[in-house]
Image (tube, rainbow, N blue to C red; front, side):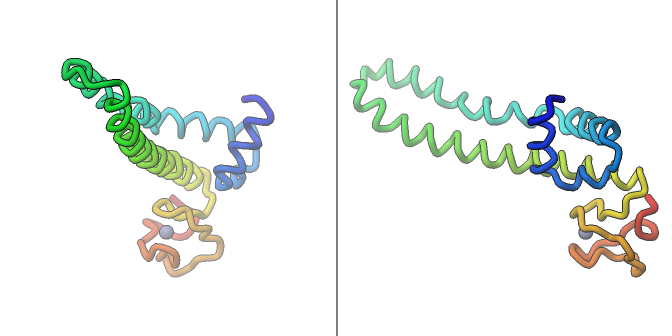
Length: 139
Ligand SMILES: [Zn+2]
């Protein structure tokens, strides 16, 4: 990974920095992106409803202005909604994968919310209230 991209990634996913070795960090990121699958496809798919509508609009012989009047706002609402949803879900998948891998490396982190569990003895995450499935840090 290129250095500026790497620092951007580490800033966006600060949990990654809990993996001390930079090479291992890249591996965690690689697994996370692989595990999160095709989440990035959804924003592209979000544009799909535009095409049938464009077909209908053309067949109704609407003027270009009338087409644009309906299409542009509809297009913006649909694509922005789907994109924010996709980004949110993709982010969630990446985070969960990173947290799971941190736990595999004995970094004490909650696999449900990413909360730092250093020194936690209760076995319950104070952030999300869920059980840890083992003492803090041990998967
Ligand atoms: Zn938690």
